[in-house]
Length: 182
Image (tube, rainbow, N blue to C red; front, side):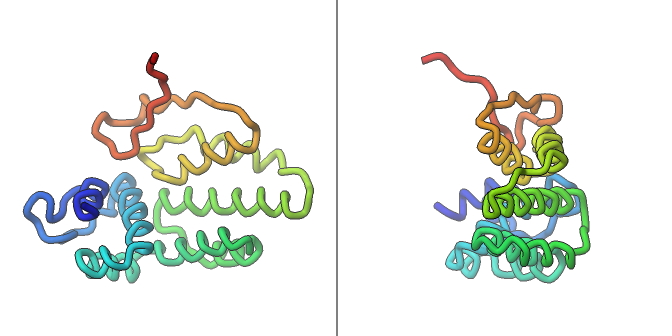
């Protein structure tokens, strides 16, 4: 079951007769966003990684910043915001998806640092977060979802995002903003 799910997330694989990730398609923003999501899943699922995707995972670890970004993510989850900021400074951005991931992690660290210190979230950071939330999911991936969720939780408001202007109908990042009647 997990192989099928991962194939759908990643695109071409054993699902269509190829070998597991016999290519890396991170050259496009959409492909890199999918790779980042896949990397995150495999980092946390050692059985699937070792059985089906070990070569791909190792290649991505060696040729991208995804391993470092996952380390930052874990550091943030552990509440060590200053250490996460230092880690982010050492990462050289490879593409615009990584740029948005790093931007979100900085905004996240800044927000939770203010909560920890009982201070106010900087208006400049709030504006950056809102601007990021309005970016195209198809181009920048999961960091945009995360920005939207953080903004929603911060300000207890729901914002309608105009995703239809940038999303394809077959994209893996589609999120519906309409409600269906019961």
